[in-house]
Amino acid sequence: MSRDIQLKDRWEELIKKLSARFSDGDPMDVDGIIYLIGIQELGQYHRTYKKEEKVNLMHIAICKLLEPYGYYEFEFFDEEGWPHYIIKESLPPLKAGEQSVLMKEAIVNYFVERAFIY
Image 1: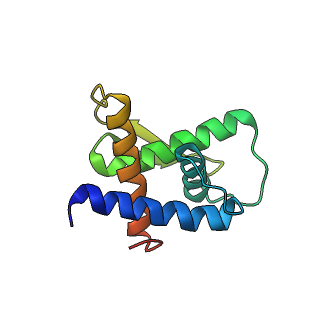
Image 2: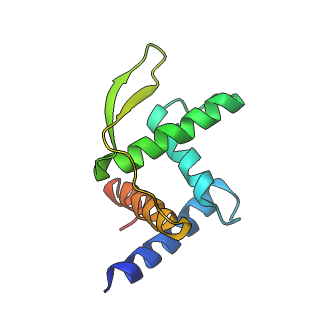
């Protein structure tokens, strides 16, 4: 199976599973999934987040997702339990489609590593 077909199949499986669990079956978008990953990485599930914290959750998720690609590296947890990352390498300029594929691939890999999808 080609890499593109496998990514497409895994992405569709992931959307189906996450949408059923978190959005009453309405298809989740990339931003929604990134937000969920941020909450997962922070580990503070049962609380309400302010707007700025939601942005920070998405930043945490993006850092975590792009860490295996060498763009970020985990640095430390602060006193409130928030993870902090450092930039190891700047992202190259990507077209919108290339950026979308990179994020989908990183998200799929994240959930494969956690055995949520296969």
